Length: 281
Length: 354
Image: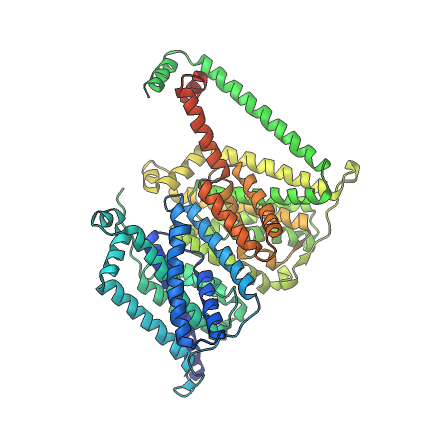
């Protein structure tokens, strides 16, 4: 029982990271109708930036904030320069462009920071809590993710920019007629996604070590509603951990996550929390 | 506009003898052109080195796989990021049959085709319920899981080490080397595949697939069985890609899980998009891109070749968002219609309108 709870909590910590990445995907999908396949690599690149800053002697939280700002600006620049030319191109062209981005970021990270594993410091002390049920690290990761969620909710619900972004995503034409700069809103959406990804990357790095390929699996949690993304990410994290611990060899962890997602989607094609979009024809 | 209309009326009034003649001439030209191209493709390996022959064989194998993906993604609009999985299924079918049961290499293609068709249909059934990004994510997960599954079932697949195959030899009476022989074998399969794809896509089935891609509701309203055609597209697509995988196992003589990573699946999609979405010849351009651009990128920059590869992808998509063949075909149509409206090439215009 004790061990089970332990596995669940460490699954939740992993799931919180999946959830953050899934949330970043949802941001971009809702704003531009595009699945950003480079999301994981972008997060990884941001993490390397943070690692570089910390290694240069900067205190952790200063490096953290600076990385978030850099990622935000970087995400906006990517939307303006790389994504915009294919905004009205066939969907497949846009998909290929994000795959191109994935390769570019992966190669650049390998080139600039080498492919060897790097140790990344954790801001949280390594202690166990509640009678060894979970570690402070797990708690820290979950806490940061929750804080980010609340901040995002407040941003979208209570600020003028958040409202404008929702309008631009829901109905670009009408939003433009109301005087909302839709293009800038899309750029901010990409910037936010990049920053969220950076948080996820920095949070996961101390647990798993840093490796250019570590994010590939995180794409799995992506589902179209923000809450769904978070819940989905947590479920995937916990299931993966439990199955890995009790049922079969951990080499099939990802396959199990896949089977789970397919199973859920077969019964709920729009995801657990998604709504079917009614289209006028 | 008025010109086009009057031409249309003219050709409607005259019995269509002239137009039929025109179509016949065009058809004859086309088949002559195809024959010349095929003759050139057969002669080509005897003028270049063995290594280049091997590279071109790879190009054709990729082309078959891309053609398969194009049936699904280009014509039917279902984006798959997991075709490396079907490619692996084909490759392992061939490898296991040859290695365990001593089946001759050429006899492994039909079983690979059947198994991959069945796998494609099985995967296509749940895929019926997914749209756009969901299907992309699910197939992406399939691509990621493929090497893990291959390693897990190691009694059949040889696990991490993979399976080493006996090298295929050319029939002795031909007196040609193994590379040239395999080139010819793969060329034959490619030609058959292109012919089959053309017959399927330029007829009733192809129109149904495109109709479903462009407007599923309207297609269903016109009486097209959407579920049946979508599943059929998945099965056929997987069949082509699986045969390509079997050929790759035969040509390389070795299969291992690490050859079938996510990157392979992404390469197929990239090849299909860059060659030409919903074109048959685009597959060959796609195959050339997958085989050669990484090498060229490596020559340009030792440090970060994949960054150059990615940049090349971006540039291609900016300049030709419909792919090389798709964009060139569009350009040619535009030039032709301009010529026609300028008062020349009435014959052509008539042919197009008939």
